[in-house]
Amino acid sequence: MLGDEAVALGALHAGLSGVYAYPGTPSTEIAEYIQAHPLAAERGVHRDWSANEKTAMEEALGMSYAGKRAIVCMKHVGMNVCADGVMGSAMTGANGGLIVTACDDPSMHSSQNEQDSRFWGTFAMMPVFEPSNQQEAYEMTRKAFDYSELRGIPVLMRLTTRMAHSRAVVENGENIREQNTLHFPDKPRQWVTLPVNARVRNRQLIKDYATFEEDAAASEYNWLIDGPDKSLGIIACGIAYNYLMENYPDGCPYPVLKVSQYPFPRKLALELSKKVKTILVMEEGQPLVEERLRGVFPTETAIKGRLDGTLPRDGELNPDAVRVALGLEPLPEYPASQVLAPRPPALCQGCGHRDFYTALNNVVKDYEGARVFGDIGCYTLGWMPPFNSLHTCVEMGASLTMAQGAAFSGTWPAIAVIGDSTFTHSGMTGLLDAVNGKADVTLCISDNLTTGMTGGQDSAGTGRIEAICEGLGVEKEHIRTIVPLPKNYPDMEKVIREELEYHGVSVIVCRRECIQTLRRHAAKK
Image (cartoon, rainbow, N blue to C red; front, side):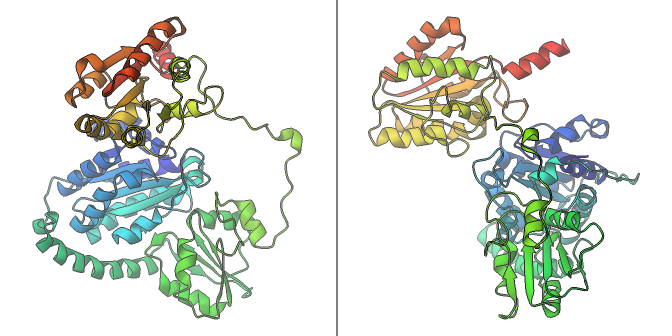
């Protein structure tokens, strides 16, 4: 199974009642696996996509409030979107078991930044589970639901790209738990976070966090193994332990502390520091553990890792980087003839975004000060040759709000390009701001009737985009719909030009089905 699939099956076998998610690589397959599994259909598990990560988090928290088990899944940047709900859930606690699954993307294979979701565990004072292989991913998911209910707290499950998207055999047994019965919290007061309640809960959470650390030190997923060579001690977190053992298939000669459950088990780390004078920290992502050890260990203990350059400071950890850090001979490289030439990503041939950008470029070239603000989706590739259409792309929903800021600073024309799924994810509130502020912006919604970049999942606003825009206050005569095809270029350019010349909020919906989902639908027919 993929690591994602192992988490999904673990959740189903733990008595899951609902999965809540917005698709994002490398997390998408968790929800997709549950959506396709016969047990989920048999049990009526909720498995529809949510509009964004914030709504997913809050929906899952509502299911937990009702005593049922829920899992919410997202990629690392999705944690930023649902941060309000995550932080609030630590204050309310959990009733039914609640897992927040964050899949990080070091090396940014399909993301705009590198981000380590373990920090959210410390920030929110909630436990973090980080499996080192697919078997642990399955087992830890089941364990995390039990732990969530035992301690009355949501649990953050952190995976990284290689953990999520690599495969291994998973033994899952036959012990499939029934779903929880409906039951409401024994302490209803803490679910109302008025200051008078939240202060009491905050003090309790601080006490509980110390208990979480004791639990981590005693966890079956954290262990300290001695080794004959005391010249070095190793702390290996999550998948880094897998990389370490790949280089020592017959056993590591050094003492090793494996960490897969947080808060970081300082007690075990101090035991390790008594055995060795130098410690190498291996962790995927940012040097979270490495930085904290400097306040835990005796000053004479040397700490190596990402901060001192022993391991690369950015990008993915991998067995080869670990091998170099251990001073082992590098493995032989593949001959150059076996290495594929790099191929930059590009919009699919026949994609409607291509025709939209062609028409947009034909118009924009006549406006010297024009700026086109982009957004997150496969249409972001419009920044690349041969189109070179976009000037910015920052995060989900930023296209329209950045265009507004630029417009109010005097930029004209200010054009925003956003996809249909991203619009309903986080663009609608920006459009309401534009309407209220009477901004001079043109919003182009490139609607391919799906969430294209992550594989063609359902889009929350399909069939309702124009109605949503009108409901948010855009004047009906300035909500225009065009079909991006070469034969329509003259009409498309006419509409784009007319709306650029209108000094107010206008929306152009550019609609044609994604070529990939169109092929799939045709094949099914």
